[in-house]
Amino acid sequence: KNQVEQSPQSLIILEGKNCTLQCNYTVSPFSNLRWYKQDTGRGPVSLTIMTFSENTKSNGRYTATLDADTKQSSLHITASQLSDSASYICVVSSIWTNFGNEKLTFGTGTRLTIIP
Amino acid sequence: DGGITQSPKYLFRKEGQNVTLSCEQNLNHDAMYWYRQDPGQGLRLIYYSQIVNDFQKGDIAEGYSVSREKKESFPLTVTSAQKNPTAFYLCASSIGRENGEAFFGQGTRLTVV
View (tube, rainbow over the protein chains, first blue to last red):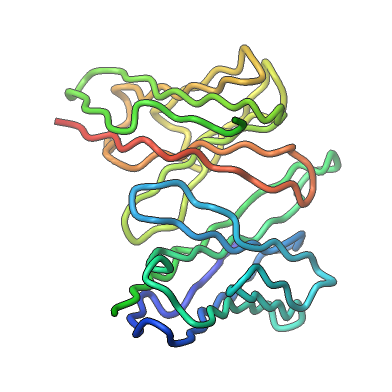
């Protein structure tokens, strides 16, 4: 069964500090891995998308890594800001038909709170 | 400006009533999706559509129905057969092919009263 597990479930850090969120997956066949940011009561917004051959990808203060061998990914946030308070969702994509139809498996997210 | 729009943002339903959630996109995307989000759970796929006039059941389709008469629109009806409809519903669209980014709407929170 395809699964995406994220840790920690929740995290509280001081403004200006760095943090790292983890994602382990057992999705097959693997197509790509995405990180989304979801503010409370809003839709998720894409941060990064990485394919099998990519080890790291940055988007401003967000840096995602991917180890396809161990099936692990991390999202590192540098110099956190109050606006970073949100849920961060790891999503793994697999291609499941010959037409390239894509199936997304979502993690339950990490709830990040930045305090002043 | 381009994007994906869901309406309404909040919706209240009496038990036994059907309600329809709207999802419209002007991104010219072929694929559209409906997800349900419950506290402590990942998003679960209800229905998806790869092209106009075609749609497929997702993992939790029971009690829901959809239509895809136009490329831009993918409304979701929550029927009285859905036993636990209170949730946050998210619509998404993508080009429908490998590595195509999925864009999400702002969501509709449905509450049964």
